[in-house]
Image (cartoon, rainbow, N blue to C red):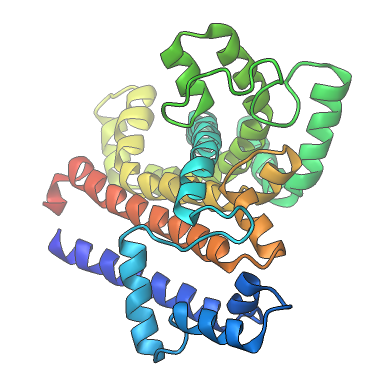
Length: 330
């Protein structure tokens, strides 16, 4: 476990180094973003020194590490607020969206992959292959626009862009920042229904991409297990096909499947930018994009560090789950 923690610490250190370098090589003058292009040279120099840019790069990097460890990512030029406060405000929206998308991907993708492997070459296997192929091929912005046109504009089955309708916006007390959870805590069922109607379409799109990846990997893992000798032995001993597939084979792919699900969840946390933009979802992806377009590097780098830290935490959680799923690892 100590080795795992050390490895994750080094990974996080590498992430901080990369973001620090990016912040220094980007063709954006952070001082000008603060003082404006009409500032005098004296004002520019004073801000340059105040921001610590006159220090050697090693000193700047160590200061940067200390600030990040304290949760200080600087102040956003766009909002005028501390970046940490902005991220605390927008990240729950992305977390809520990615979590629901991952749940959809797991609930549908794992059984689909298992059945496809068990009935290799059959109709379900062919359907699973087509689902995975389309999931990897279709641009998500096109699917998002078509989804809004059909299910919102034409059929009216789902809510429109945003997290809630105008009637419920701001009416649910903010506890976790996740509207579905907060509305349940408040016992406000109409607000929950409204929030669900807004999140189900973008979450389904992300879930479809997650489903495509999870089902393909599950099928691959299952095909490998079903060709093993212990499966043949179990069948010879008279175990039912259901027990062979769902208990023995699926149980033995639990460890690599945990990694696949964790990677899928992490990719939805950092890869939902287009979905958030299309659906006007006020999440971390939209925040980073706006910061990039406005040259707000504190916001961009702060958001990037948070996403990278999420991957580090997911890897740590995966390693902990390994120890429960595989006693041989202890």
